[in-house]
Length: 612
Image (tube, rainbow, N blue to C red; front, side, top):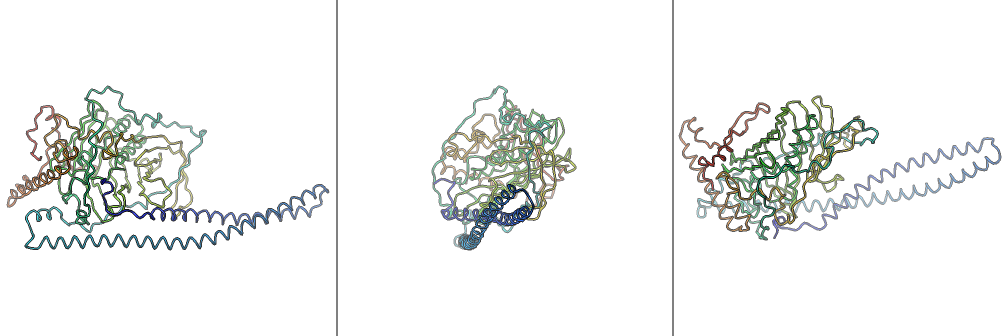
């Protein structure tokens, strides 16, 4: 059974029918409004036409003119009779459609309430089952040390936390593309539309990378026996079998943000900071393009686990990630490029299983600095949601707002990831954005989808339009034709059997000499899983997690009873990152303190802890 359809029950076939009915009704109401308006206009203009013709007949005109006017009047009368017939037919159609619409809406509402009731009943049963099992496990005759340890790690500390995204207040706008004659200003962003996907023309001096991994095995799993204990929990604290995973760690998944690094290379060469902002925005969107089919979870890194991606010779950059905290799970990432930029981020993943969906909230800030201009950009990631956890086929969506700020120039970009809706006319996975200067004046409109491409259009004029459907004022922007900023690379052949990995993802776990002893490539359970040996991988995963818990308990025991300063010195300290207060955001973040690449040059990893 494929892991993408693990979740127990089949989706009702009528769901598609109901969605189509609702969408049809929505369009029908709009068209009926148009017909009603046409009805009024035809009646008004028809009456005015006949009055004018009657007045003409009363005038003294030559005989031929009078005959012609009479003929025209007869034709106008026929036209009005026909129009009245059409109007009456439309009125009958309107009455009939409204009556059927009300009946269909009642039926749709009933079906929706029944489905909601079913899902709530299933979720309640899961919680009751969970409570019964917990009560049974806590009985004195059945409690065991290992179960108590698991309960510690499966803490319920923030079970009732809810998360909301503020998307309703975003400015609405309409874009109108200017004609060719108005293009009096050239746009230098991506004048060659294919340039965005060009691979470096420099000769590649490193070894050939792999293009495939072993096909995913067809393992079946009783999902319900595991997921019924997870409702409301923080998933990072629950032991999960590798059957839910993909053979990459979160550190490697974080490194995938660099798949479209050439956007930053190009941005570093921009003379205009506003054009640079467009490319930075496209880069921020591109990091989601690999997730559209990737519903499996990456491995939670062990504390102290690292991952390097050394592409200095091919692409001019070096990337290093380290897991700096385990509860909450947090990773620090640092990338420096010879092509003029440095990127760093610290990401803490908060995830909640609510019975119907799984919300994944990356908390933390991304910093991007361009060396020559000094421009310093800051933004945060949006919420990812995995739907159909109980019923149907898994699918993932991104929703929320990203505000990118250039703290050097105070220019901004507001990006809106529009959540998917069955009843929306918008293209799925849509992203829109506005790039504005320090005074708030808009200069570029961004549009596209987070799984395919992004475009920018230069604004040449803006005006206040009519109010939208909810009474909000809409701004109308007149723009030059859009230019392509970024387009997703096609997936490799056979990707559907290789966890839907991109070409970059396929090489991330490829064995490589000279890496640190804590590198994710050396993690044994992940390697066993990649090789299709999932049963052995599950045993190894359990061993590694228990080893990590034992180390933590020993560290805590050593710190017990010590003075404050002594306790501080015994607290876990990452090897390659240290905490520093960020002057721009005022937050305390883990930043790279140096030394990793020098240790690699010396082939000295004696300082690395033994985590595997």
